[in-house]
Image (cartoon, rainbow, N blue to C red):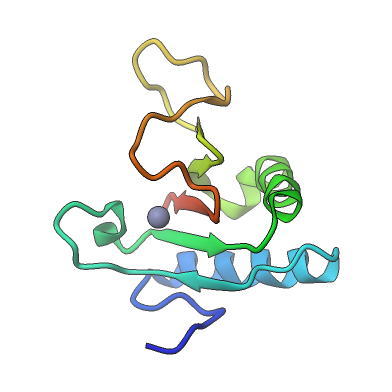
Length: 120
Ligand SMILES: [Zn+2]
């Protein structure tokens, strides 16, 4: 599959939210390089059709996009983000402060992309 800025196989809202994110981050000088949408892998969160990986080429761009996402999480209907060894939730998770950046212990530390899950 060719590298794309439009996520494949995701919900209508997830595709629209991804379009806005790609547009706004490019306009602000922190472009997304390409995106990944649906995956059928049995171990992937992307099976739910509501996750997008925003691939970037520098930590500076990723940090800027992280801040953009948490500024706009309500209108973008974001529920979960992973970036640079940390995770952020817009829902209750046992023992985890709401909207805090917590350590992420997955094997993939997400240094080349932001994983974003949307509400619908
Ligand atoms: Zn992902």
